[in-house]
Length: 75
Image 1: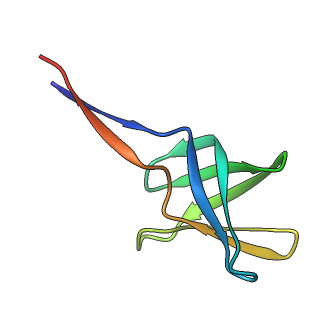
Image 2 (image 1 turned 90 degrees about the vertical axis):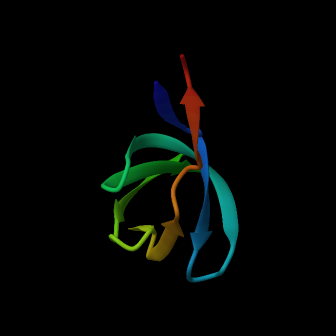
C-alpha cells in the first residue's frame, strides 16, 4: 500500500518583483487551492489547472507549483 505525503512548505515567487521565498503551508487541497503564510500573512491561492497556484495580496501576484510530494510504500 502506498501513501502520498506533502511537505509543510513550498517555494513561492512574487511575479511582480521576481523574488522567491520559502513559505509555510496553512491549508492545502491538491489541485484545488493552497493557503500559504508569508511573514505572518495568509495568502490564498487557487489552482489554475496548468500546474500553478496563483494568488494576490497587497497588490502583488504570487505563484507556486505547490509543495513537493513523496510516496511512502508500506507492506
